[in-house]
Length: 262
Image 1: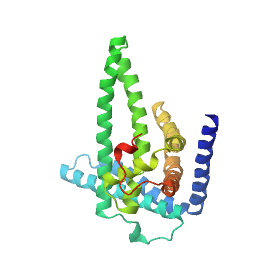
Image 2: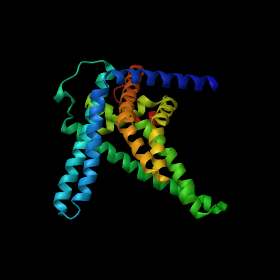
Image 3: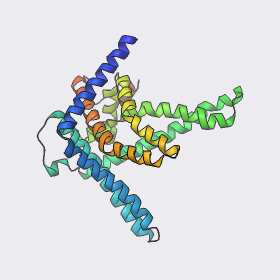
Image 4: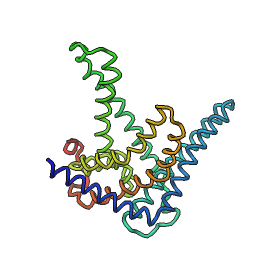
């Protein structure tokens, strides 16, 4: 067991060092996209408050515009990170811009993940119900046991499906096929991905903790760190992991969902 954990840690460290090297050599291009994401997110929040008294039509139009711009920038960042991780030549401005099909499949993937979350949330309530007959209070089940179990299951699902946008943006697959490939490719790599996700999520968790305890200045500083350091690192790290797993993938061109769930 110790050798297994040592091997997992070593592989995770190797991925981080490679990603940091790529990021240091291409920080401006990646950080520039992260800056645009940061501006888009904060500008949308500001306009939502500023245009509080305007008509519903204008609010809907602006909402759709900002949602489209924000998620399009995410796909551009992803494409840029994959290109840099592969060491390929830049495809030019229009080579980074996602097509309408890619954008639609990406959004559908987010909606599908939300539906899966809702399904897991409901199933966990059913599974937790027998605990009431064991003498555990309703509040304990509702506010402690149920959120914990739901979080554990959704973390596992997130790890298994997190690479679906890569297949959409690089191969042009539809959402369902991209989910299948993400499941197939991450099979046997859950522990390594878990270590990587926990490390890159640590700063975000500290930001949430600072907000919860009322340290707003610390929270704002951590928000800047997340926007201009952690998010660029995450994009490159996940791209490096994706490329490594694709090289090691030995499955077919149409992987089965049931064969790759566990």
